[in-house]
Length: 212
Length: 132
Image (tube, rainbow over all chains, first blue to last red; front, side, top):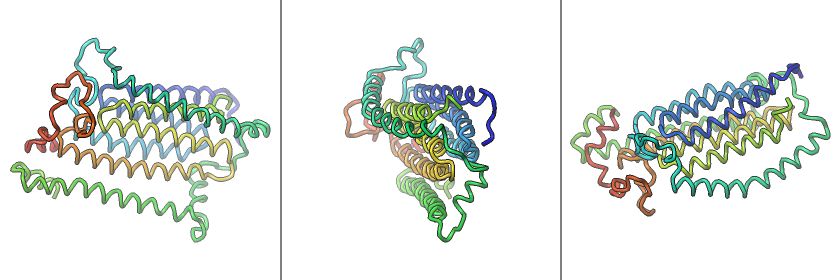
């Protein structure tokens, strides 16, 4: 396994871990919905860097191209369509000196509930991780990775090698059916309501014209 | 790498999931709740990749599961956002406290407006804002 003989990967992975957590916190706490979406897109970049450092280069590429590029585009688009006015769902954006207002009574409840979830979830995960890492440390770190581990070529060989007997090929093709069903569902959601509105709304014809 | 060990990667993933859960509980805007769910998914994806790297160097099954997870996330986002758009057309609002008929009154500062039943908001002119 070709190793970069320096502390550069260390620094990069530590920095990206800090960045991911910080940016995700910023997403959760941001007041402006558009800003939250853009921060989430930004937080995907250090995640992609972490994937690449973990020799998952193709996964890192997917994270940027598909996740940050396509899925978050949907979110941005819907936020632009719905255009939540200031104070629609979050803290009113215009209250000056409102740094204290970021936290409210409901937020405290949410924080407490999250703490309860953490108390429930962390101990078993910690135990499991300790059980897994004990033999790993005994055998000396991570296992040997095959040549080209995590590249698109290697991953495609895992998925598409011997397509007749490979269950991964079938499940991979099933994703496309799932996406097709999802697209049909999404289009149907959008259309039927528009048509129902036509029947009782005098302002509807432009809506109908747009959907046609 | 000495920093990015399996326990540290799992800790980062756990933090992401908890931050996302906090966001889901805290947010009142449905779109931003979905956004927080994406943060949680991010944490899960990180565990898939790091388990594959630290425990299994022969094949990329974890990477493949990551691809599956991305596909499901895309479908989930598409369908969820379509549902939110329908909700917005009918109620002209995507705030979970205001479109709820089951819960008690929202504890906003602007309770006066929040108490107005969502049906009132669904006036015929509402669709004009959908178009812009």
